[in-house]
Amino acid sequence: MSALDSLSLSCIPAEDEALRLPVREFLTRAMRDVPARIRAKSWSGYDTKFSRELGRQGWLGITLPTEYGGGGRSPFARYVLVEEFLNFGAPVGSHWIADRQSGPLILKYGTQAQKKFYLPPICRGESFFCIGMSEPNSGSDLASITSRAVKSEHGWTLNGQKIWTTNAQACQFMIALVRTSGDAADRQKGLSQVIVDLSLPGVTVRPITDMSGDSHFCEVFFDKVQLADDALIGEEGKGWEQVTAELAFERSGPERFYSSIVLFDQWLEFVRTESGRTPESLRLAGKIFAQLAPLRAMSIAVTEKLAHGESPIIEAALVKDLGTGVEQMIPAAIADDLFSRAAQNAPLELLQTLNFVTQVAPSYSLRGGTREILRGMIARGLGLR
Image 1 (cartoon, one colour):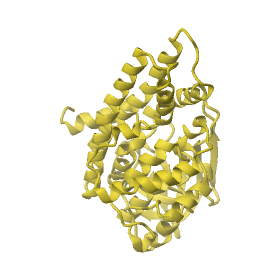
Image 2 (cartoon, helix red, strand yellow; image 1 turned 180 degrees about the horizontal axis):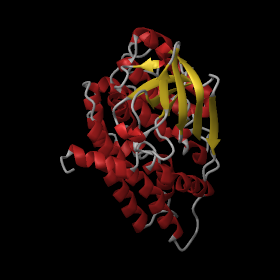
Image 3 (cartoon, rainbow, N blue to C red; image 1 turned 120 degrees about the vertical axis):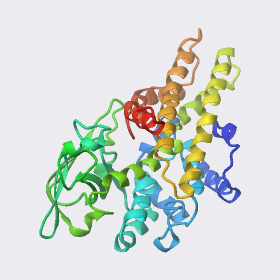
Image 4 (cartoon, rainbow, N blue to C red; image 1 turned 60 degrees about the vertical axis):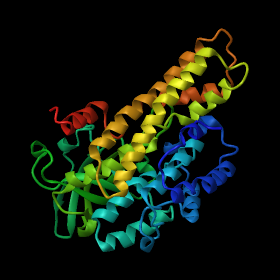
């Protein structure tokens, strides 16, 4: 029994909950021989073949309309899929951004031509997107970005730089937040979103190696990149409104508190053995479950708002801020438990998984918006500033 099974009571509609069994059966076969230290990478794990197989199963773009190759299902259906993917540690990094937010963004703000061109290959697991938001000297303060797209005779000329762009080296497209009028002092005014074909001349992608040895973060440079007129998505100057709606998808899902779930499951497996069970470990397990359960309930409540067409920006920020705190606590607490024991009898695979998660855990509270930015948003939403 996994940790997720202990959290599974919810108000997810029955027709969406019914997806769980076939997805589990598929993932049990697909992930059977993958060690936990690899499965722990999950939403940064990159496997295009696996993504295409999910597309063939009809499990990508499941919330997009059937006319574009999607499943026409509710956000709850995707919630079930994501929970199972993360629980099994499936390598979802290749299609993750396109499925989670780029596709829904294009559906909401794109032209009919953009929808027909971009959405079907996303649903097939053949087209991958990255996010062009953060910049050097801006970080989570997106309103201060300086990358600029200037109207030209044939479309737009793009110059600037993006950083911390996940898997940009393996994606075909980026949806970038850029300035199309004014300057950084204008803050939210004059921002727009453009779709950038990353194979265009003038685009340079440089992977950044992190502490774990992975290179999924990248910096991306634009040097006089010529974009077609239809690269603009939505309305010019409405980029801030669009990107904040997009962030509600990015910040509210179970990935914001399940990043350490594979490690937690490995540790629970050890704690269930006679040699691994201690009174302290049982208390710690209860403490972690007690924090995961309300987070999951909050996340599902945000999903319900998304299902009703709302844009729960503040609620999503709250889930993300609280969730990353819990998923950072998990490896630290497990390390304290394992290394405080008199007998060092923990399985090697558990220790290797702990080592990886400990190295990447600091990024949990950076990606998708830093704590400071999120708490400022929450404070404004509560009328406190």
